[in-house]
Length: 217
Image 1 (spheres, one colour):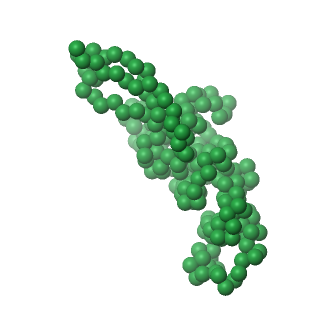
Image 2 (cartoon, rainbow, N blue to C red):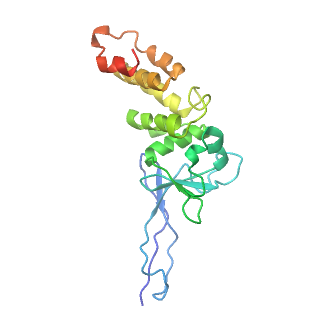
Image 3 (tube, helix red, strand yellow):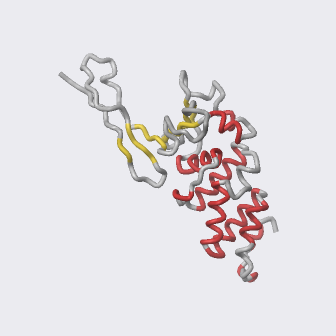
């Protein structure tokens, strides 16, 4: 007699704070029509779990699936409140997975994680994302998902804003230059002002044409 054993819930210590798991072990008879199906462990955000309570709205009612297969359980009302374009209309019936409450998005998990933290107003310092991931997240909230601003982008309470500020202050002049350039490209004046305060000792002779173009000079 053949049996299929499904894996137990487990947790991995990963930078993107992923949780991997599926149903508890259960025996399935050889005649079960699902025997020939391939079972893959699910990757679920440990911040945005099925029963996470980040608002008073109760349990999450929608699932976003990143391009690398990580599931984020979120509240539709939170995302629609943060976004001016209906969160890029990913919740339109034609874009949802057939017969489910899931929607696939183009961002990888690390980027989507920051986007959602910004939407919920949750701190994200413990992820210590790279400047590249931060920039990808900012581009997503500014262009693809059209987050309202403020408070989601320009206040100290915003997780993305705070992460960029920390990068500018702690990373030295080169980091501050990157943040200033990003702020200029996205027209985020409060962030540009904060970054510029770290550039008072900048040697003008070190300014490149590329950086000057990036800041609109």
